[in-house]
Image 1 (cartoon, rainbow, N blue to C red):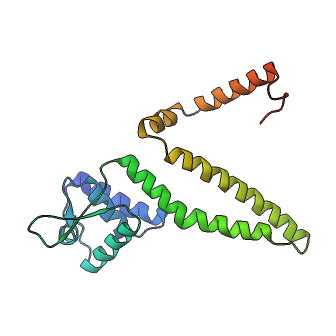
Image 2 (spheres, rainbow, N blue to C red):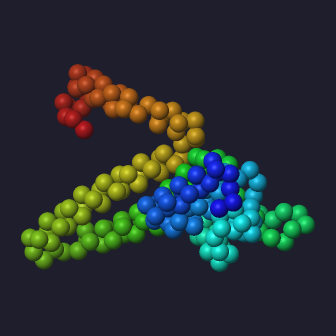
Image 3 (cartoon, one colour):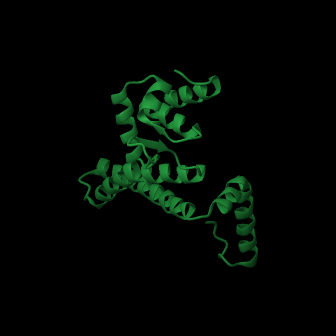
Length: 189
């Protein structure tokens, strides 16, 4: 690798983490390189910096484009394609979460909806269907929550995340107050 030590360490780490995230090492390394680069890079720049083959670089860039994690641009007087990542780390996070939802969550919800609509033939299937319904309800709840989060502006989202466990305290206080005033009939949510 032909990179300064700090950048090389980051790029290598992202490559190793890629396998845990379901992407190959080259894709992770290229994304990390583009993320920390102060200028857009073309495929030749990437090959030289990382030391991977031109074909691996091309395939990785296509995958990153499919995930909407890199921007393609052309520079005046240069026919090559240049790549960069969005500047806003929150935009990257939201894009990654939306793409994972489309590729992983939505197909699972579709499968679970179909399974829940089936007529179980025996006790084992009734038990399995009940468990699948629980999973469906949880994933649906998280999906709706994520849609609400995704629509928040960054400042509000940061404030919410910094609250952490304080949110639980506010909710517990609200429930206690509701019970005292009899607004929820003494029922816990």
